[in-house]
Amino acid sequence: MTSEPPSKSSTNKNNSTSSSNSSSTKHDWHESTIITNHSKGRSSAISMEKEVIEKDDKEQIPSNELGAKLALAILLVMSYATLPRPLHPPIGEAPSVLHVWYYGWITAVSTGLGVLPLVFVPDLDKFWIGVANAVASGMMVAASYSLFVEGCTFSDAADDSTLSSSTRTLTGTALGLAFILLTKSFLDTHEDLKVGTLQHADARKVLLIIFVMTLHSFSEGVGIGVSFGGEHGSGLGVFISASLAVHNVPEGLAVAIVLLPRNVPKLTAAMWCVLTSLPQPLMAVPAFLFVEKFVPILPVGLGFAGGAMAWVAVFELMVEAYEDAGLVVTGVVSVLSLGAMTWLQGLIDGEARG
Image 1 (tube, rainbow, N blue to C red):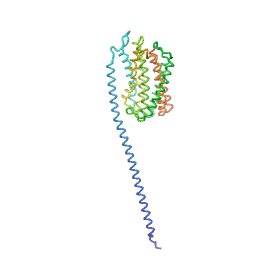
Image 2: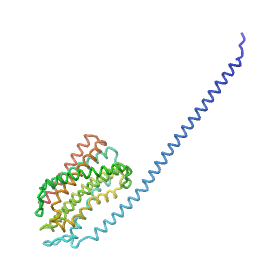
Image 3: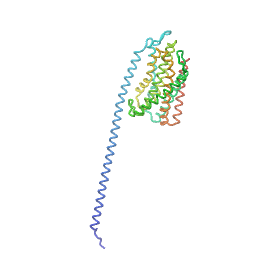
Image 4: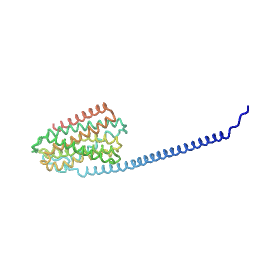
């Protein structure tokens, strides 16, 4: 039986199918090439964008370090140029304005020492950043509690207010909470906010911390000025200033713990710490010159700073610590930090009153 050759119509049909498959393959290959090229182009664009961002960050860091070095130079010059002679006010004589300024200045500079325990700490991962935030929140809650107690128990011979110290402290607390909520609302509306190399949420959080730490320095500055203005101002003012200088070191540590995990250079972090305490010498001098005017409002200032600081500690730092390190670690670390800070403050206050 002889096989019949394929018919012409069958050959044409096969050729048509082959041509169709070839055309489809070419079409698919063309689409694949376009998609591949598009993906490569997009990846290339993303890669280039990342390189630009990294390049900008690398360029900003030397600029920030240069600014920090300039700030350090100014700090050293100021420390030498304003040094009173003799350093300690003569016994039995009223301290000079320069003495009051300088002791307030020393308390501010001591805040920068809070960075020292973290100088040799390597870069922290997410978990340890959470632990650091828990430590900072505990320390700030302890500082807030100290401010509340100091305001409610405040007593001074020059205090002629008709309102109790507790009432004024609670009024200040309400004002402090309102202020920090308004400040946070304002910062949240500025998505493109930048603080050095920090951007967006990091920049807003750091600014809040710096705001509240700076606010509470106002009341501490008034406290320095008032202590120098009393009958035994020369001795009491020096001792209160020394106590505040020691007290400021862990407060500087609380600020540094927030800054350093966000890749802020250590020297820059130290300068930020000092900046948060600059109101101390600035407020000490007018409080010393006008003691009678400043004494009645001191409990309001203490409550204001305490309220603002407590809100940031609980609703910013503690929440972030919980997200990064978990509930148990955040609870244990923040409680231990609070206890250690409270013990240290009690020790310092006991020495000051003794």
